[in-house]
Length: 183
Image (cartoon, rainbow, N blue to C red; front, side, top):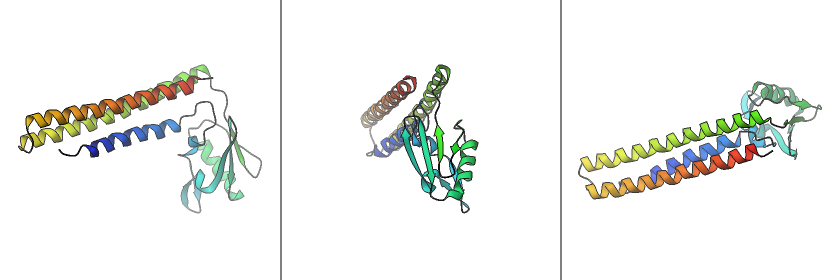
C-alpha cells in the first residue's frame, strides 16, 4: 500500500463533481453554468448551448444567448422550456434572453436543502473511497505484504485524507448556502 494517491485522486474527483453540481444551481443571479446540461439538436448531433451559441451575462439577472445560426433559435427555446430551469425564454428573432426572477425566501431554503443533499452524497462517496482504501490495506496485511504497524499508519493517513475532503465539502456547502441566502 505504498501509494495512497489513487484514493486521494478519487476523493478529489468527488469534490470536483460536487462543485460542478453546485455551479448548475441558480442563486438568484444569472450564471451561464445553469445552461451546462442543456443540449440542442444541431444537424443531428446533441450539442451544448456553448457549442452552438454565444452565451453572455449582460446584467446581473439576465443571460443572453446568441446562436451562431438564427435557425437554431426555436430549437434552443424548446430545449430551455423542456429543461428543469423554470425560466421562460424570450426572443427577438436574433437572440434569446433569460431573465432570472428574484428568488422567494421559500425557494432559497429549498435550494439550500438541495445543496445539503448533494453534499451528503459527496461525503458518502468520499467515505466509500476510504472504505475501499482500508479494505486494500487489510488485504495486504492478510497476505503478509505489510505489517500491522504499517497498516495502522496507512489507516491513519487514509482517515486524515477523508477528514480533509469532508471538511472541503462542508466549506463548499457553507459558501454555496451563503450565496443562495444572500438577497
